[in-house]
Image 1: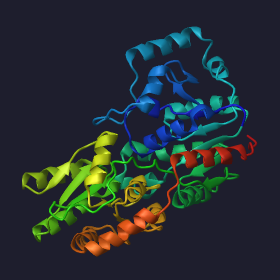
Image 2 (image 1 turned 135 degrees about the horizontal axis):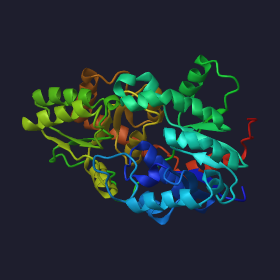
Image 3 (image 1 turned 30 degrees about the vertical axis):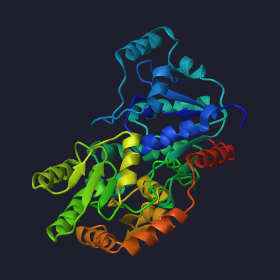
Image 4 (image 1 turned 90 degrees about the horizontal axis):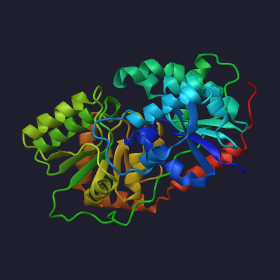
Length: 398
């Protein structure tokens, strides 16, 4: 590809949140570098445009988004956008002023506003147009998903039909999307391929050794607090172990969702009030996260369903065994070793797995060796693979 591809980061460039999709989008932008032109849909201008300097700064910011995942636009940016709308010749003219490109990549789950503007963008790109597909969790577990996401999701899956190809991040996600389109009897859907995500190599701070036997073992759980992440079952499992006299600390890191994470937050506070060794940090910056990985004995990721499950591989890449589900995309990530992969992540099963690792150092050591033996795809590898696939993708007839 001679010209850079257009990379739509409409949401990620306007938030400091570092949930899974934002982390993927940021890593992709960094790995692609000059091979991509980052763009967004400016809803105030009503047009697509390249990112401004303040938006690019959001992509590399190291701050923490405390309690807020949504997009934020400064007042000055809103005013500039409205002025552009008035004097710039309209949305179609602004879209025509996008730099030359060889294709389009959309790694985010786009909003209704972006979806309404997509046809103009797709028509302006002469090369292949592709989107990433992360998961179908809103279809499979609507009761554990934010209500706005559930209401929006069927339209989003229909809007994906406009692209020339879809890159699913796991085989489970690919099959979920194809099954949905098949159920709708969708004619001529775009091809869906599987390109698993890469992870960023861990920095040198990551510990490769077992914690001191004199220290209270720390079990780390990294992931946003929301219904499908199943923190309530994990907390129930840990309470059973604490009540039985098992000595360990549980540390939780992740942004709490105001709707579906409420039950987990209430359980955390109740356990802390009784004096249980439970630490909840909320969202943290990268150095704090790395220090948490370095200081833990192993990790647990009790999620019921994922599109991929980055925290599992990131734990293993740091030599830390992980307790997780064996189902769906999590099973795909656990398959290479280093995990206790469970057929169910209910409280009883989780408690048994955690107790075994805490009580049997040789089992921990064997899993740590298996984790360190694994070879992980990097984010650069992922970006290269994605770009190479895009170059082979033919344009579909509209």
